[in-house]
Image (tube, rainbow, N blue to C red):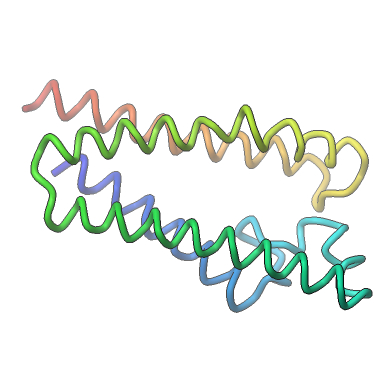
Length: 144
């Protein structure tokens, strides 16, 4: 049950992010594109905007695939698939620190992220997800 709760919390938060990316990319909350100064510049040139919009939708599509797979695990998965799903989610979320965090930190230093310091907030949020899943996994094994 604890693993289901952690997965569902993550699904809901990520689903809200996907909806924002599809419907309101100019929204100023929820890790939206309006956090990036380059988004506004891209909107001034149709080619750059289309390219940026393509990438935003591509990310949203990938997130949606991940969400649906996790939802499938919650609904139809056995204990083993839920454990593996949580471990894989921890690892896949952690890849953020290798691939994306250095980039957003650099953009933040360059004044390209709004609000300033958002890269640290995002890093803490990602760590929070990893901690949530890790604690759920520990509780699962303790109270099994």
